[in-house]
Image 1 (cartoon, rainbow, N blue to C red):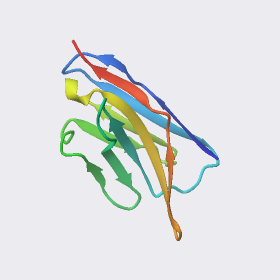
Image 2: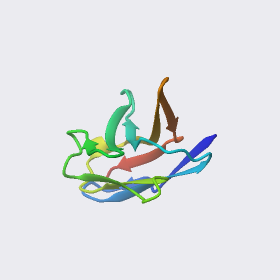
Image 3: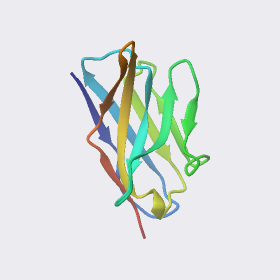
Length: 119
């Protein structure tokens, strides 16, 4: 059983910054990818950023140049540095860790953390 716990959310003014963290505990596997999704009120969950083992880090167009995803060397913690925040970045942010198995993908999700960008 894998548990993911997010931290670092909250209220910030437009133009401000926040740093989200997500740590895995429990049965730690070799994850193939880790990243962040978000869901704004009335909208579907969308990808924000994903770090792929042995590959690149990909971002949604809406956050390119403002957000940076990173991880620790153990591949157990992922971060999201969010700069130049806009009101439209307001959402619940979820971290996601993925294992790629021969039978398909196994996804693990955090419970989500609220980020509110407002003056």
